[in-house]
Length: 55
Image (cartoon, rainbow, N blue to C red; front, top):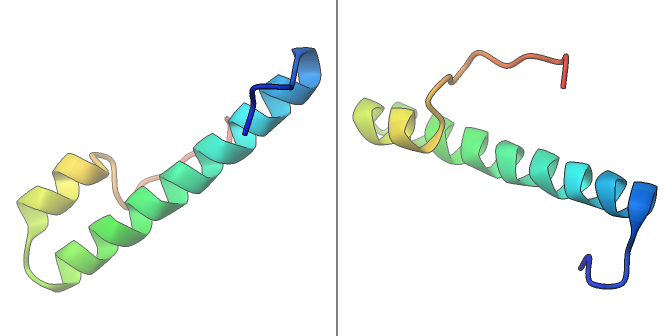
């Protein structure tokens, strides 16, 4: 997905992909927590539910 991107385009795409990864981790951790698997949820998303918008 990033093989043909350089410079700012590459940085933007990497940031977009990391946002997607973080959202998936957060959602998986939430589902695990709801199912009673708190330790597994912390391993997937250690700071759940805390998030910072400063990134």
